[in-house]
View 1: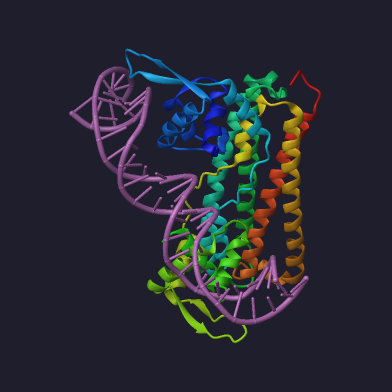
View 2: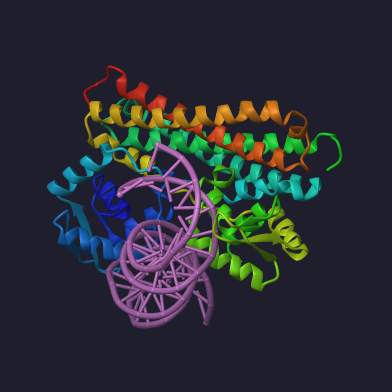
Length: 187
Length: 187
DNA sequence: TAAGTCATGTAAAAAGTTACATGATTCT
DNA sequence: AGAATCATGTAACTTTTTACATGACTTA
């Protein structure tokens, strides 16, 4: 099984969904750190069903196209549990901005400054979105956030990773700006 | 041009290298945030040479196989400068551990605890390696680290991103451990 | 003598992204 | 009237990773 399969199972463990709904959630990043396009979803759902990890039910609709609603099975849930507790393989990150940084000594300061200011802005904007979501969760899900057996806790935990990631990234960009803005020997 | 091409240019802008040397550096992560295997390097070098961005010189060796030493050209350097200051495309991160986190409410606490303790350990270990490198750089390259036109500054800056990344990741794992270790309602 | 490094490539397989394909309904 | 959403798929293309291929020399 590839990771995409577990991503679908993780979604379906919360509630039954159509392929379209799954694709939409995956497009908008599940837990802020996973995504896939719909062309990946439909074939994978078929595979999962062939393996008995999910089942579908045809739901007829009058105002919209009919849809297949998928639900996770007992074996699917078991497999998901097993996968979720196995340490993840190290996945070496690729970050283009850091690669650019490796060559930043070649360019003039003003151009470099603009680059890091732009990226700092991006990460601060994303951080703000996350912080808003966090505020909402802390109000709405108050009690659940102390319960590791609640899906709300899981969503909150993933969000906290996103917040930490963006905050640290923005801080690093800020440090770069500081370094580049300083009066220094040539450059 | 794909990013791999710029990665090669970024390396060659510092010093001439053979394909083998480039592959070795790329295997061990350039600036900690980029990598590639040697099967990617040789064809890309050929493409870069065809575009006039690099040139090679055959260096005959008696004790070892002969090698082609590549050097960046003027146009190569210009293109690299241009790329280095253009904002990077947003590259959505994929992180398997965060995806697992999204499903963590399904598993029992002890298994979850073990998972985050293991990942915390990994990131702390990487952080320690980075911190050692940092200490070394701050001693050896002292003066250069204030000069944005120095390649040493660029390496140091990339390393600082690595340090921030690992520190934040480890802290998040630590937070997860705290949450899961707490006496709470069921689980 | 077996494993590891230096050295350069090609080819096959897997994974991921983008485009193609269709069609009804609802919102602007 | 045109764009967007709901809905499900397939096909082509690009990218990335593994494996194949060869061969000399050095270290354990």
